[in-house]
Every structure is written in C-alpha cells, then in structure tokens.
Amino acid sequence: MRFTILVAALAAVSACSPSIPDSAAGVGFDDYSEYEANRQAREVVLTGASAIPPAGAVSDESTATSGRIATGTSEDSADLARETQAALAATRTGTSGTTGTTGTAEEPLRANPNNPPPETVESASGISSENDFNAVGDARSIESDAALIARNREQYQVIQPTALPARSGNTGPNIVEYALATRHPVGTKVYNRIGLNKQARYERNCAKYSSADRAQIDFLASGGPNRDKMGLDPDGDGYACGWNPEPFRIAVNG
Image 1 (cartoon, rainbow, N blue to C red):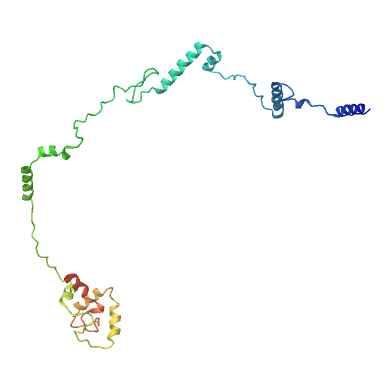
Image 2: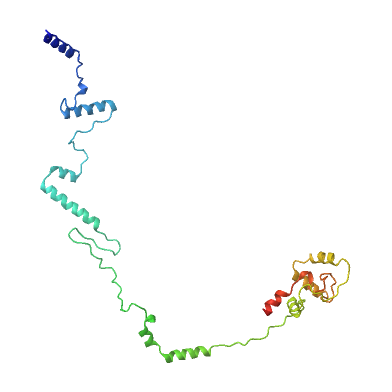
C-alpha cells in the first residue's frame, strides 16, 4: 500500500514540473556549434548588427600573395619567398648622394666609387710644426733669435717725462693748494671775525651752497681767509661752511 502511494506521488510531481524551454539549449544539452549559431542569430535580431562570420570563413579581401598562400602549393610558396627577399633587398638599397649603391639580398651594400678618398695624414707625430721641437729647432737658432731681439730693440722709443702744463686763464682759487698750504685743524681760530648774529648769518649763507667745496672756493675768492665778507667762517679757522682740508692732505702725504 505504501509503495503504491509513493509511486503515485512521484508521478504527480513529474506532471507538475515545467518543461525546459528551447532557449535553454546550449552546452550540456545540444551540440555546441548549433548553440553558437542560434546565439549569433539571436544577437542579430536583438542588435540589428551583421552576423559574425563563422569560424574558418575567409574574408573577401584578398591579395595576390594571400591567394597563393591559400592554394598551398610548393611553387607558390617558393615564388612568395623570392618576392619577399626582393622586397627586403629593395628596402635596403639606396642611391642618396654618395653614401652607397644598390644591392641585392645576395650581395651586400658597398661604398659608392664616386666618394672622395679619405685624407692621408702625412705627419705621423700628430702635432703641428709649431709644437714640434725638432721642426722649430731646424727653422730657428740662437743666433737668429738674438738678431730678432736686436731689431726689436732698435725700434723702441723711450719718452722722457715732462712737467705738467700750467693752467691757462683765471680758474679761481685752488682749494687743493690751499689745503696743502695750511697745517692747523678745523676749529682752530687763526683770523679775527667781528659782527653781530654771526651764527645766524653763517647758517643762512651756507645753505645756499650745494657743497662745502663750493663755499670754500667763494670764500677764498671774496678775500678769505683774512676777510669774511659773507660770514661763511664765523670761528675764524679759515675754512668756510665746515670745509675740511684733511682729506686732501692725506691723499698727498699719506
């Protein structure tokens, strides 16, 4: 009784199982080539692209070489080998300028006979004649060098020093000569000065000059150092507007 019930249950389950659709056919169910053909046809329908050519198909694009290769005959293979060698030889040939000549696969390239011959080095020592002791010794001697020195000495001209020319015209007082003629330092009273408001006059008049040298020149030209008409030397040291003769003394006497 139990066996009969088990068989009936298995039959019911088998009847309820869904059938395998055709789209599931593939590896493990049908032949692989048939599955691949069905897949490519389905791709064409879905994408609208042209079908991929099956394996082993030959392209319509052909060349003379590929045609001979497809035949597979020994004569075609030999012809193809010869043409390949000829093409390689053609790429190696060249006639640019004078660099080489044409050649073949059997014969290597050779230099162009029109090329100029290489220069021949005549001196094996590899140095110029000026640096070759033997060459210089043959061309010159002690006597010839002495004669050359004597000729050069005859052309010498010795110029004796002369006195400096005197200045022409009236160029005004020379503050350098005045600095060297005096000995006392700045601030030492040597000359008497009288007048009122000497300091205020001194500051006002000295402000008109761009330098102490210019003030000293005008001071000497106006009667200084004995007289000070413009009030440029209120302390009576003979130096106007703070002019200092010491740099000139150091430059001459060291």
